[in-house]
Image (cartoon, rainbow, N blue to C red; front, top):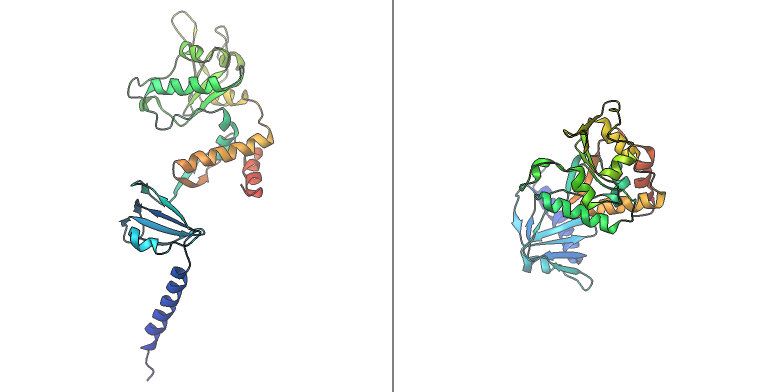
Length: 274
């Protein structure tokens, strides 16, 4: 009768050999003094992590992991910050969103309406007269803890008298200033376009709000074409901003308004090694 006692020994030898090979090589990057959330079967929080090329090779205490430090290792003290694996956004529209990223103000996580106005004001200040400034989704009125409401034409005119400024609220409303309304062909005397309700005050003046999903398409149709080089640059800008939030991968859901040139910009950035 054959004995299988040697099998565990062989497996142990192979594992020991592999481990010795990995740990004999110095890590490319080591993070220390952090709260490293492993998100493995044990789901531990450790001090340090060692990275070799595109793989995590070890996690543990500072002293233990620094044994993998070599002459060329980049040692980063994260000073108590939390480090997690990259997040995957499994429902996104980033390919479409990248097109006008250079014209966008992002209100993600902004809890003050006043701060939102300040961010838009700063973007207008950075822009040339006549250039669009937009907030294309990613916010809600309820996120503002000081005043949970939208924006009036007058407020937006005060911020941007010489720039069309518009905010997309989900897929059912646009808040716009006077130059933006003019660019969209909307005046106080304009009949409601198909599937759009032009909001007016008691005096019949435009409030700046356009209600209905078609208002989103109308706004986007007036933003103009983006040059190919700028589109590729916007892909890079978008991805850098996502990386800052910890997003390292996404699944694009497509949707209305997605054009071949949106995807082409990502292909070009990929082909250029960017």
